[in-house]
Image (cartoon, rainbow over all chains, first blue to last red; front, side, top):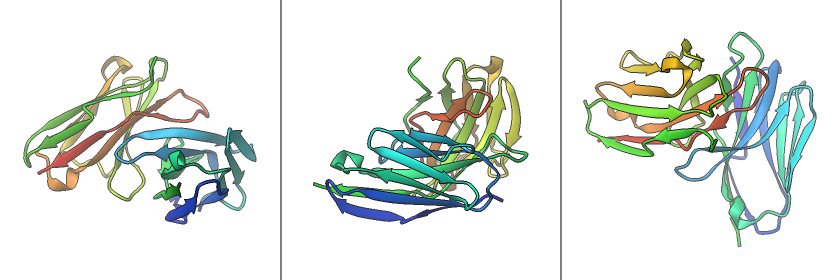
Length: 114
Length: 113
């Protein structure tokens, strides 16, 4: 059974700092990995999708990497801003029998202080 | 198309009442999913439709839960005889068949009092 762990559970940084969020998964047989952002009481907004054959994806100040063999992904946020404050969720889509399901981590709660 | 729509955004109900939620996926997406998220946890899979066929139901979905997707368009999730443990955010998502990412809706926050 796939398990996804996100470290740290919470992170507080001053504005302008670069930061890294970590995600690890136990089964390397995945189709893709997706990073989401969730604001309090809201739904999920997709940030980046990395296919299993890719090593990284970039969108603006965000860069996500994937090391499938070691079961790890990182989300790098450059020059953080208060508006980046949210919970960041990592989700993997397995390539086994139920290959349409996402397995989520519990998320990292990010606070960027002005 | 403005994305995945869910209605209502919030629902407060008394224990024992029935509730129904609606999800309108992105029109060209043939796959639709329901997930449930409790406080401090990541979303957990509930059920999956490909077109109008419900292809999997999680063990989290007790007999009090039923989901439909008539004609492969919008979907409804009904909870009968609600319990306090049903209080959660119910999230709907859709995508196309293939290695595509998910698009989630804004969710329905259910509070059972």
